[in-house]
Length: 78
Image (cartoon, rainbow, N blue to C red; front, side):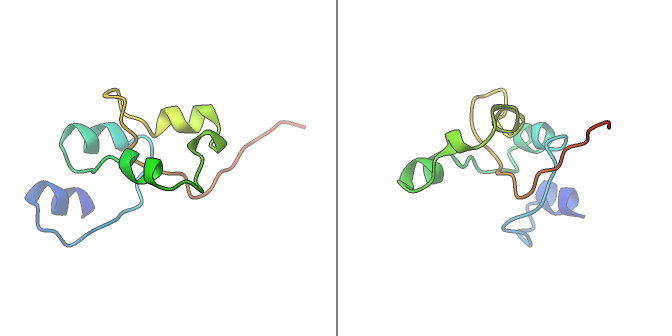
């Protein structure tokens, strides 16, 4: 439903939860606004606090940041 709304530019959604799997597709279609200016404008927010693999997965090949993590999980074998 979100993809359909974005592709039709219906404007129902201002923000959405997407995965890093969907991010490249959404960014390439111009459905996301880069977050770089917002991150850079907040002196209390340090993007370097985000683990490098997460930062990379939320940054498109154009070098722009399009998402922020809101949770994290990991698996391990005991």
